[in-house]
Length: 374
Image 1 (tube, one colour):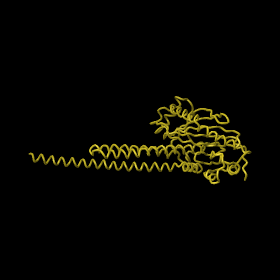
Image 2 (cartoon, one colour):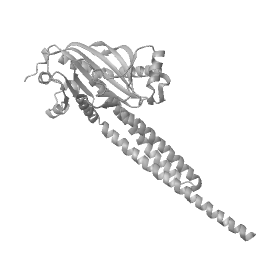
Image 3 (spheres, one colour):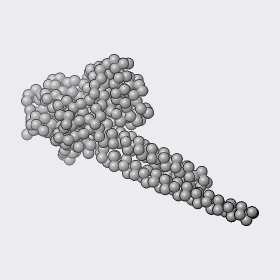
Image 4 (cartoon, one colour):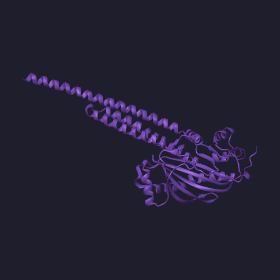
């Protein structure tokens, strides 16, 4: 069936650009909400899925959403107004979203607008805009950031959302009449059949008139009922990926340092080395405990039980973003550190036992020597 994009317009839609930052070990969300209301005096709310029953899908710890106001984004065909929000997750991630409203655009123009937004938010001026918004969040929440850190890791994601078309359509009709590939790939040149199939492989529908298509860095969502549950789920999956990447890099840097410390401790004299082994073992135990606690929070950021549709989308996003792969790498490195901690603890215990044996032998010799002198 030939595509007829020219006669099918996006009547109401939104383009959402996300930029996620890891800014702290953790965030006290209650304190952040209170501080923001007192110092910035703009709106904030606790996150919840809009249409899904709480018993079916719910946030582990509901994030806090902060209103950052209206901004102007410069595109090639002129400026557009966008609303900015920030969402704080308790495991230390801030997700900033820019939402560009869309009305009465042809499908081709909608795809071009999304690609223009993608180019604009990636340029140097927009990079400064992300930094400015992040600084505003940092200053607005103040001491709610627990062990803040400079933002060296980022994730970005782009979603095109259509709430209504110029005529009533089903998911099958959309696939037949619209070419989703330019929107999902950002490419203007014609892709191969294999590349097109890969882009459209993660496609999901629940009703006849809704559809979600996922890729690594973009998604298209057709949701005529206007809820944001799918975009919220994709935001959580990106936040989980970012946090797992942070711990993967943290442990990558920690393992060589750990090997050097163990080797340096073993080269020193045995008597003070006993305490050094114990101190190093305690340090590694603390690291493992902290990382394990935070990764459990990340794993439980979203709890999906009964909503089959959102569960499929969430699972597909986690697989597509390779969250499980990064999480498995973190677990392997934690296992290495746990084994090293156990070996150090055993070595420290053996050193103490050896020291006690030497002391006992010395005391016996002293007793014998004193007896001979008498």
